Amino acid sequence: LGLSWFLVAETRLALAMLGCFLAVLCPFLAFEVLDMPPVTVWNCWANSFLCLILLAVLPAAYAITASGLLPRVLLRLCAAVAAILSGVVCTQMIHVLCVPGHLTSLPFHSLWHLCSATS
Image 1: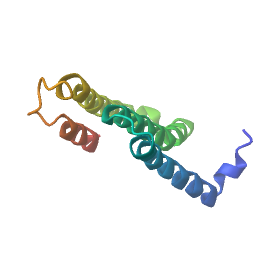
Image 2: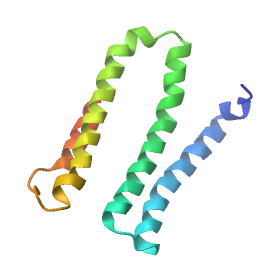
Image 3: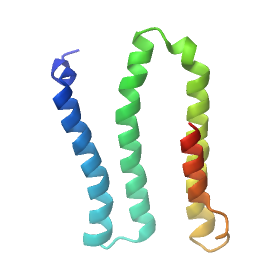
């Protein structure tokens, strides 16, 4: 595939560090420098976090598929994805219910952490 440079551990480490740096820098710049509203900054952070997750999951998914282990872990993988998607729904409820002030007593963001921890 022409990705032999990616197999070097130092390259992967440098890319992971750059990804983490950018995931934190983008929301910081959006809030502190560009003075964007909190919901916009939250969306910026959520998209940065999604990119970090994809950078971690896609190589692992490729390795599992290439090694023929997918049938053995498919059920657990589906359960983990369902838990994370449930957490994403809870997090999105913050914008629908909490920001307008309709429901502020239910800890939706804590439910995200609970769902992602069980995955």
